[in-house]
Length: 249
Image (cartoon, rainbow, N blue to C red):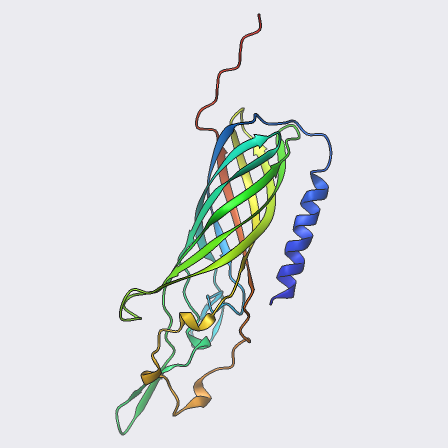
């Protein structure tokens, strides 16, 4: 487990809770808001999902940022409290150097390659949000949970393969109100993948794995069953329709 990520995430959540303590304006109950978002994912170092890309010498040393897009819909139930669902998608590449390389034997010579693949990651679930308005600014905290489905590259795996695991997520951010029903939000979340099995990302079958030249298989971080992945996004939240306020008599 990456303890620095866990410490950062916990400090972020506590800081946001402290910042939002006080008197706040209540938003209208029984009102939907929709938030599309774009940003980047920072995958856990032990996950097998690439936060590094190969440099000119073939070593994975250059930092890689993985784009992500998302959509959330929240329903205000009481004052600043809301519940809703979310869906986020990303297309990360796996770390080929984390898995046994593939060996091609031509008799007089052999060739060894590290195999990476592009995967589709979908993170979806339910969340609860505490959204406090302080004039134009609205700090918020959110917690939730759901599932993560990863679809592997069918060409690298000789067919369609998808595996799904549960996750928890928590974090928060700050909104800036543009009008009565539009808010720009900056959001940081820690997506905690549960029961993670890094070997699911290995596209090389046992028949072709390199066992003759083990020295070329690089050392990798130990596998973790619980991994922390940070998501940084900017979103635009709006109310699709707003009920008319009753006129004063």
